Image (cartoon, rainbow, N blue to C red):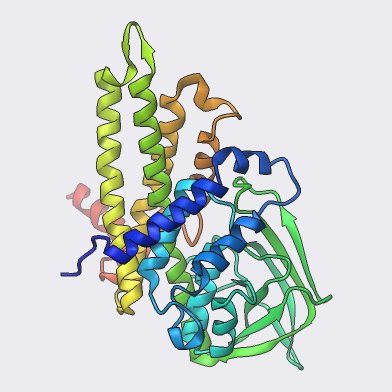
Length: 375
């Protein structure tokens, strides 16, 4: 049985990331950024890449990476979820998984060393079992088409675009690429509609390899997102417990009331279970296990709703304070709600789980139930 506990290296990585985020990404700074023109914290992103080498964690050492794996990537995402940090690390991790599946050593090396940023140009809501939005491939090759709702696509990033039967690399700085920001619920993870008009592209993979690369990248996105959701939920639980312990009403601590204690105890159980399934998904992804899609679907089916409930409890148990703009609870609620549809909704993943373990489809189950009731 796989050991899902955090190893010494993972704990050391967590401490380093948390220390950097505590010093350079306090929630007050993130909240103030929402009123500015720069949604991503470029200075923080530079520190994460240059000082900690986060983009190279899953890249082999011979290509300039750390030679670690996706378990370590998941640890970083937990900490970024705790801080609701406005950096494009999730998109970079998804792009890394696609390039690893393609075996493109040149782009992997550039990504690992921070020479370029990369993002998979698919809608954030695309599930691993859903085909990406079609993009036309013209001679050249050149790409034309529209991809809505792409996350973590920086203005100067390298876009990995699924088109036709291939996967192509496109420079976002080319005049044939137009990225239009769209209003999203979570301002700490901005989205953009990408319009390609004869944009020159370089083929990264074609045929079955391209299909496997895109599927692997979307599966990685679902699996790794679960760790971010766990970090978010843990912050909500810890912050709420601290608040109800210190907040007094009717001459006693609010946390001493039975209804509050039971609600937080239930949430603690859910967060603990969510951590187990998220760690399992990251571990199977790191091991290249054929059951990684199953683990990712299980993680998203469970962790997404838990993160939303944790954020809702955080807002509600903070009372009137939790509903104010000046408190960070709304940042976590918006991130949790946005994440709940990223890489497929929980019900989409439950349906995927049924297929992966050979359960009857919902329609068939409904017929069986109807027949049973009639009898």
